[in-house]
Amino acid sequence: MFHVHKNYGAKKALANITLDISKNELLFISGPSGAGKTTLLKLLYLGEKVSEGQVLIEGINLSRISHNRIPFLRRKFGIIFQDYKLIPTKTVFDNVAIVLEATGKKRRFIEKKVKSILRTVGMEETLHSFPPSLSGGEQQRIAFARAVVGDPKIILADEPTGNLDEASADIILELLKKFHTRGATVIIATHDKELIRKTGGRVIHLNQGYLQKTINV
Amino acid sequence: MIYNYKRAIQDIRDHKFLNTVTIMTIAISILIVSAFGLFFVNANEIINSWKKGIKIMVYLKSDIPETNPSELIRKIQTMEGIRNVRFIPKNQAFQELKKQMRRQSSLFENLKENPLPDAFEIQLKASFQNQEKVEMLATRIESLPRVDEVEYGQRWLGQFTNFFNLFRFTGYAMGGLFFMAALLIVANTIRLVLYSRRDEVEIMRLVGATDSFIKAPFYIQGLIQGAFGGIIGLAVLFISFLFISSSMGQGISPDLFTIRFLSPGALCGIILVSIFVGWTGCYISLKQFLK
Image 1 (tube, each protein chain N blue to C red):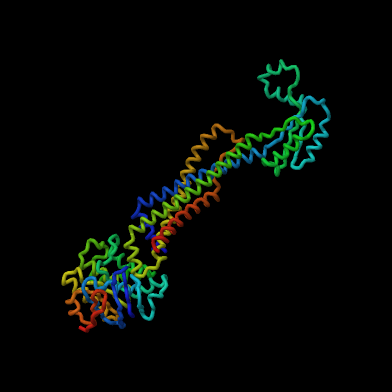
Image 2: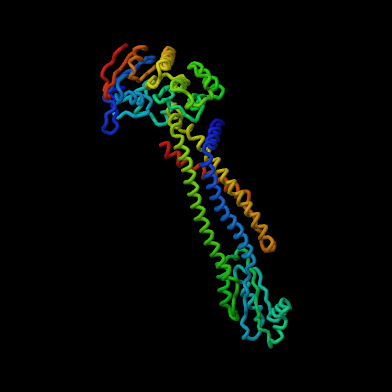
């Protein structure tokens, strides 16, 4: 990320951010609400476009990427959203399977892989349940399963423990660590200092869109 | 592909009301347009059969002393488009009339002389059986000496053709309007379905689904709506046709003309147009929604 600015009209969401993230790094983006954490994540998966500056992912300049290539870029990411973004009318299985279906995987492979990942996050019993019938912690684990089922190179987690009790937050944290150990680059946006303390890693602190400091915990 | 079909069927199940409205709109549009088509096919048939029977009757002046008509016959026969000329002497015509009106024979008893003129019955070549050419020939014949009057049923044929052309134009205009209406309704239905699934579409995009993956089930849905709408519209038309033709058949001689349904080729064409309506409606809404 080189001298990145992001404005929403007159409002400055991010200002002059320069940041280098290494492969298999575990990076925290911290800061208060409105600091620009979610915006920074969105710029990575092209949920938003930069107003100024450049974002490069594995050498690809996101400002120059064609519309047709965006889905293929997004397949590099596994995204965990703060509000889970599960489809309430689809079963847990279908919610997770959608990632593999979108990439044209075979039905048999999808069934095997989805069941396996749900086992990993401890949710294999909920295969045929619908998200609204699950607790916040369970929904977050399903969202996590969906994020990692496609074996992404980069996991983006936006406040992954924000709405969870301590026990559920610990489960999600362990899962994130597990996939980081397996080789994924993990970028977590959070204001939860306890989460950062428990995990450790590089932390960048944002405030009102500016990168204030970088520390290693 | 199977997955896309399943998604399309699931979407139709999830939005039964919207899909039923769309299918019924397409069906009604197809029914109206096809009904016009059916009318044109049959009306055209009738006009053609009438045109084949077009004859020119030439009545000669009766105040001129009777002469040999062979000179006049020769002149008419040299004209372009004439197939056959038959001379009907006034006595023969009178006898034929009497024969035809046998029950009203008292009408003829008081007649002092034959009121009918000598006449020619002219049959035309097939290439000359259209209004403009008949009119042209009639004018030429009318200018010949001894010719008093020329008749070829021009008034009713002209009026019917004009009425038919007006009807045809109305049919085209209505067909176009119903096509547009069906198109917009399909586009709006798909837009409503898309709107109700906007979160799902957004999630699909975020997890790396391509636009074509997102669009495919909607296109299949549009094709299914179009096909069902077309089939239902034609089925209703066929039932109405059976009902009308059976009640009309009792009053009209089959020798005069036979009412027939649309040909298999036309039916396939209509269903293809209907499918095209479904697909295009889908294309319009997807193009706007996935901008």
